[in-house]
Image 1 (cartoon, rainbow, N blue to C red):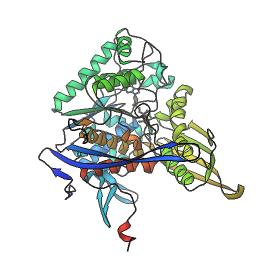
Image 2: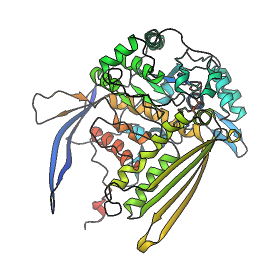
Image 3: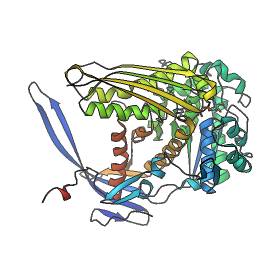
Image 4: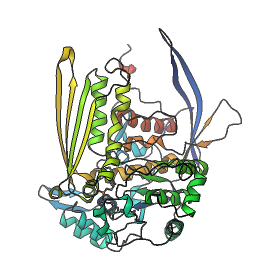
Length: 503
Ligand code: NAI
């Protein structure tokens, strides 16, 4: 059910939804004793292509816990499966997906699913494929993950056992030593040979299913960080040369992204490592291909970016944030190695920076709360990750407030809906074009290739160079919602509800 807006500013053609939009924003300059503020209005025209493409997604790390859980959820939802639990029957659903399970307020008591604002790919029509260094078929991978109950795994088996991950690029130097035993499905040859194979894989998948679009998403093992080296990965040209010369320090994830971008496919990074070296970002910009990342914002960090926002915006000063995690899945095993843990630590560390910097009453310039992140591997708990957080805040007159939060849940059941949202929203935002109306000759352009509008789903959002990073979850969600509203011809959600306040 699509929302249809009756407004002189919106036009529905066969091909497009076209919406005229006054974007109001503010520029401000701090002066000695005042702040000079200019309010500005940009007249924009949004154009959203109505035809939804036949979309395929290729997961890197398809046979991992996230990859197998996502595939299982896609099939279970498509087949409307239901299974027995100790509490009775459980139907398949997409809880945790902002596109499938959250709503947007249109008017008093009228809320619609976010997916009804603009045409968006139906998850039931999504085609899936991918790579994994482990050759296990998807039914066996689902069993290995120990995420879903055995009954459901059995029902899904005939739908999953024929799906086998394609051979993958593997480099032991980038992941923990303990991952070696999984690697029985790997590509040989030079880096260039491997990139070419990935490009052929993408092409084959596209042709096999007659797809209009393919999105590649990394949900594979966390890699160590790559050094940024002048002459190697600092420009698109140097990166191409380095691949051709088989330079040793190029991460597998950068090679996947390079192959995807070269084929014009959006690439999304669900892990913390710095796949997007400067040369790769330049390549995406040159080719006008979308990239997004980094690291799914699923549990502890999501809550942190809500809680610290609440505290700081309430005038309460968080001074110590300590987060312990223990988990027993393969991700936890890999993160037990120092270099891979370091990638995660970096990605988890900066998530409160913008909120802290926004309040100069609480924090002096450069002052930050103590912030420590610990991750331990405890095999017994499997995918059921435990996150324990202690937030100490200063309240009025030197008082203290300590909040202790214990969070237990299946990690992959939080991540799988984010994979769906990332793919569906990346595709939707790729169909949106915009032009500035004051310039008569202006042409429609796509959004910036660094798709920062997906920050809501990412722990360490990648943004266009020189633009601010927003971590606050509600601001990130409002950004998605308000852009979708603008394209539909609806005003932004201001929550003023003046219609009820002004007599
Ligand atoms: P997992 O270890 O179960 O799955 C990763 C898969 O990637 C494995 O099957 C492995 O064989 C495969 N793999 C490793 N290197 C590869 C390569 N070069 N090419 C292709 N496949 C490769 O881990 P899980 O739990 O599925 O997590 C996946 C990633 O998502 C991890 O990096 C994790 O840090 C990240 N993540 C997970 C979150 C969650 O809530 N589950 C939240 C945030 C990030």
